[in-house]
Amino acid sequence: MLKVLIVDDDVVSRMNLKTLIDWEDNGFCIAAEAENGSQALAMIERDVPDIVITDMSMPLMNGIDLIDHLGRHCPQVRIIALSAYDDFDYVRQSMKKGAVDYVLKHQLNAGTLLEILKAAERSVQRRSEVDRDLGIARSVQRREFLRRLLEGEDAGREDIREKWSELNIRLDDKNLAVALAEIDDFPFLEEKYASAEMEKLLKALMDIARENLRECENTEIVHLEKGRFAIVFSLGKVTSQLYVYSRLYGMLTGLGAEIAKYLNITACFGVSRVCRDAADLPRAYREAETLLKNKFYMGKNRIFMNEHPGERREESFYVLDIRDEKAILAALRNADFEEAGRRVEDVFGKVSNMRLSRKSTQMICVELVNIAIKAAKDVGIGISDLVDGRESPYHIIQKYETIGDLKDWLLQLYRKVAKMSGEMNVAEMADPVSDITRKAIDYVRRHYQNDLSMADAAGDAGVSPSYLSRLFKEECGIGFAEYLNRFRVERAKRLIADGEMKLKEIVNNVGFNNYNYFFKVFKEITGMTPSEYEAECKRVQNVGVE
Image 1 (cartoon, rainbow, N blue to C red):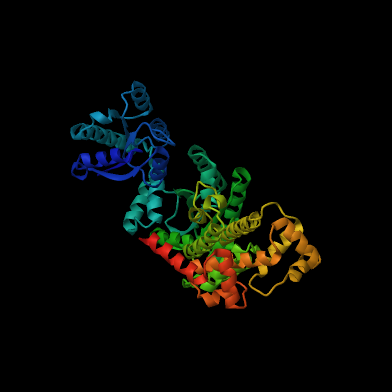
Image 2 (cartoon, rainbow, N blue to C red):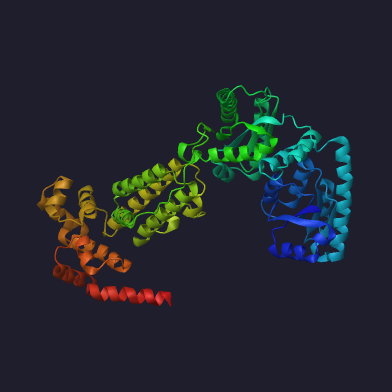
């Protein structure tokens, strides 16, 4: 059964094509579908189809460029060109680049499609016969076979030996090891470079790897996906595990240095133990993949080897404590980055000690991002003000490959929230204020929950209470005590709206020692009692739910 890849940016056109005929009854299966040429190339890297049906006009990479690429790199693939435009130039270019047929979408029906597919099938069969005679596709077949073998698709010993011989694989089928390589920061490289540039980068990397490992004759290199490739080493007569590790470490260190020198990128390697024969390669590949996960905690540009093969760490479970959430939120609202940063460091310390998986750590980071967004929203700061508007912070989290990079990004986000929160608090004043008044305001933000006086704030600012009193009133338009009360009431309003604390708890939380005094001040500033404000918040929330 021939595998077909459909490439079209119009989902309706793809659906129409898929339902036009009974594919399997006619000897075809739709292996995958892509929205543009770039996406199609990534799929073809993983699994080469027999036939590609492609639209001509698509974003990122159009049909002509896709056909041209396939003609140069996958000449065995048969191509059928589709277009919504009756454009002779498209016809001429697609046929010149190697398409076996061209058809307009509005003229396409079940009979026409089946006729074109059967013609492509005959072409595939003729090309396969030529390839077998001349051995043109031998290297492609070899790499594809090794890829499937590593990923566990071909596991039968007899079948493996037969393929090993048929494809003339340059490896002994015993005493093998797998090194799985991953380019560091690959998601960011994909953003930096266009698809054609990324293709050149990967090709250059593979060329460097082959050249660097040329002296090791019994080696095969297979590009797997995106920024990952596998190196299969045939080790001959193994003298000792220590000797093998030393030898592989030396070769991979040299390879890593060459990649960094010529491409200005780094990579990590996970290296399996020696496996007895080729049938055990899937196990070796999984082991190398598991070792590569150490990159998350140990960092980039490293080689990971299994020094303790029997050791296995159980996955731990951790959720952010509600007290930590509230403390971090309060610190960000008060523009106190030091306190927020300290709490985040504590969280990452626990995550690191427990050696949580990358996925579990990402979930903790999502919670920490939610706190930052809530604190920002409280002072009128939108998400687009915190991160690049093109991406959500949740998508950014998934790109980071080490716990150190994740923590640094989060601390940077928190620093920005605290800074902007502080600026918004000061921006409430009519005019810019002096450094002394700014220090007094900052002191209020950091200590409003405690007993404090103008003398405390003046001491922190390095001036006398009388001087601060006069300067504060001149610059802010209200006295220090009134500003302190207004600040405390604003914090109380937020806690009331959150609905997680009782009023009596809120009174103490925002620095009032007496409920009656809090009641009096709250009503003077807001025009309603705390209980009335609480009822109004609940009413608004209920309306929102409805």
